[in-house]
Image 1 (cartoon, rainbow, N blue to C red):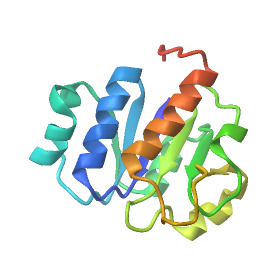
Image 2: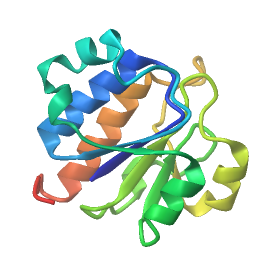
Image 3: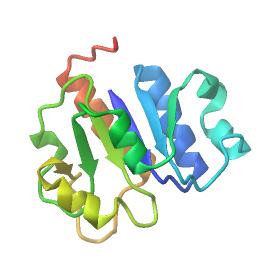
Image 4: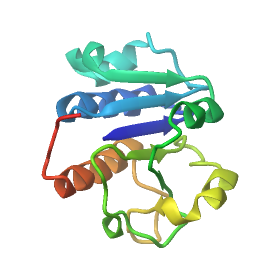
Length: 152
């Protein structure tokens, strides 16, 4: 599996997701600009002593990421769709993209990929779940569907 963070802003979330990525043999893709330095102590603290083990790929832009992964099956996590993440049949090499914490994936990207947008159901009271929680929920559903095959 592949988790993609588009313009991540909060180092704790990225560190938590990195830790989950290590323990599930998932590749973590970060698309710049980042809201923090990869040397930031909060990032490493959240990732504990796993951060150096993260299969990490850093991309200069969204276009760079797309061009570098031309055959990728990408799902876009958003609150702006009705298609639930549980409606998807994930493959073991799929990508799940999450947008920046403060605003989510840009509308133009979502509109171009509407059939691949997925959401986590929740009540209308809040704006969205925490990024690292959302990534874990969807990642583990994808892993469940692929019988927890942690091999790449």
